[in-house]
Length: 510
Ligand code: XMP
Image (cartoon, rainbow, N blue to C red; front, side, top):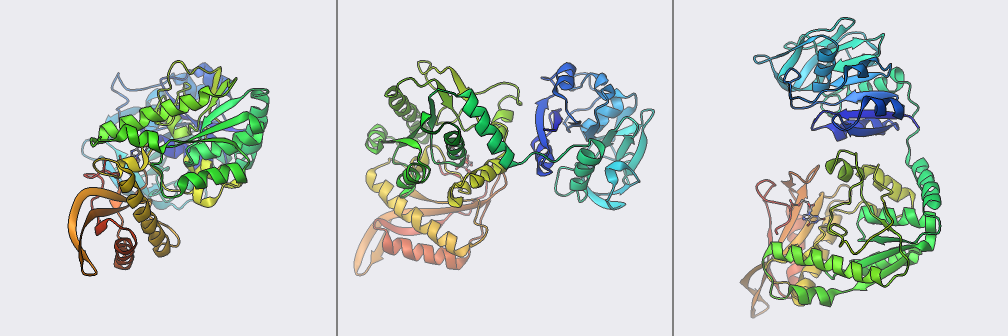
């Protein structure tokens, strides 16, 4: 399989670069410039190398850099933003501060004839974000693009197959970005588009069948996308020897525990143990109102139950985890095996020791995980489900959690989700749910006075959940949701809609 190395110099778009390459069905992996050596790069046989952007200035001695021999390996290189400046600097050119002519945002770029710009327009819009610029080209390089303010927006050394762009082709605002990656990966590097999820499944099944021969493997299945895909994939490889423990703490959405059990046990024939421990969790949470204490109790209790269930099994040698590529990158830039610090498995007690840990999805981005899920036949509503916090409804009930409140919230949340699905038949908001506040208010129903809870509805649109915009739900959707909830769910006398974006609000209320 052909591989492209994305050499990370601290850029904020490094994952996006790797995704753009993978969208072309070529495998790309991100490695930190501080954690990979020239030797390793040579040994790994990459077909091309992409230098990412970064916040530094190449002339600052503390900035990340690389052995300049990398430009002599004969492997094609594409530098982006800081990466472009670094190429100029390493190859003997000059980089200066563009104090008065820095560029930020959409900028018109004029491109000249060059393999990198094949099949692109001469004049196009690109995304710029720089304060330094290449003021003097290294020898052997030719300018291939410019803007009104930037004399060298791109340069190349065709003979050595080294290319550099000052703008960001990975960002969708750059009109010719996709074509640039395609030109680099196929025409310059000569890659074959052989990265696809069917092959990934076949390769993984073969690999784990072999690697886990005769071994018993344990997995904490939450019903979320990552652990579900991990489970079905491993089950395909080792069948019965995969044991999934599903801790149902009772803080899941309405009927979710049954749905997860039915799907994986009946439909996929998984060896699944469901620990029904709602009472245990409710007892631990009795009287607790502080949000952080609730999270802590739920997390600790989860691990305790998981450990207890695992203890009942004989001879488990391997632990499987649903770690995915962004988890790997964020916790170590792809260099070491890290145990996902997730409430499900994070902080496993030392007493639980395993011969080894397997993470079948550790090379995949979320959209690739979903594609694998679909190909494995996991139902679409499970594969494309919205995120759900580990502590579940525990952080959506303000104040003390009781069985009665849980029941009220589950019913109301189910109605809201039904109404959203009706009013957004295609693209639903990225996350939406109900929150049971601790505030009560007076209402009237029939001739009687009521004194019920106030329920808040929350819906957000977001790309990454780091920032989010509240969804402009239609009045019809809000009206019908409110009408149904106040009619159908006993205990709620008022419904409000949360119109706070993030920041300043968080997505969850607690
Ligand atoms: P916040 O509330 O921080 O949420 O804006 C951002 C996203 O993270 C989810 N979330 C969690 N997920 N364990 C999880 O697995 C947690 O403790 C947790 N807290 C928040 C939240 O649902 C949203 O998608």
